[in-house]
Length: 205
Image (tube, rainbow, N blue to C red; front, side, top):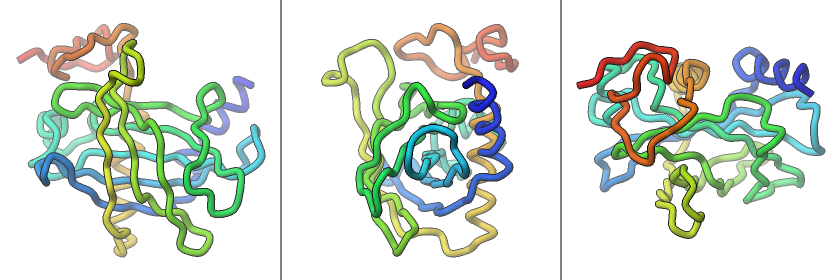
């Protein structure tokens, strides 16, 4: 299983098919995001199509604190990734993969709180999925009922192939650069995480 997962993880960056990139805003337009959908080919577990869904901070200067600190560069706290199994045609709410996710599950920080992709609502244009809504769920040990949620509704896909590729590549760089601390405080500014926790050098403010 470990070999299969490692092989599939490598496929995310090299062989996964980019299906869609869509913009969105939250916090009354204060924070700009993108949604990215990739198809993971030849995934060895389950019947159906595995989709990698990412929500990434905009590369604008007017976005999450961590993207601003990185000055638009790849950022350890700017992209959340999770994987979903579409097991029937035009499925609108696919099953999230936990134990057999084919690649790195990563997180996004908004207002100094960490979120993961909790669920997705898909639309379909023929055989190609689009993101209608993604629910970001705050991480931590509180019961799901008490965790903060952010519902992100997406606009139409980005038609420029070069721009979509640029955003998708930024998101995948973030995902592979991410090294999550073994112990994550409930709330902390990204600048407070030290090198021994992330594997990358970050200076406290």
